[in-house]
Image 1: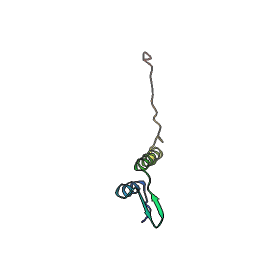
Image 2: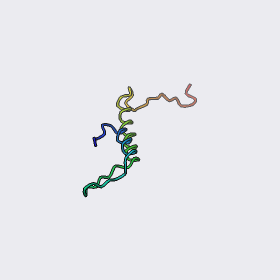
Image 3: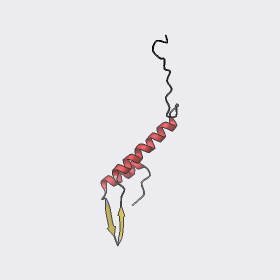
Image 4: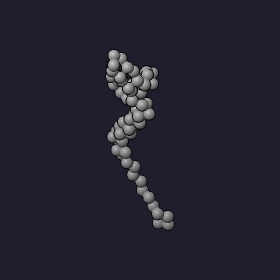
Length: 68
């Protein structure tokens, strides 16, 4: 079995496979899918913030009421 290259591949592999397996006395347990989805969201948020021209910040001009 190969190691997934991306988090999306890991989510897909874990969704298709068993939660845990024991072979020859060795037990392997996969990560919870909800943890992988949260990791994917974190990676996407960091990527979007680093590639946007505002670097994740939004600049606004605010005028108080009555200032014309």
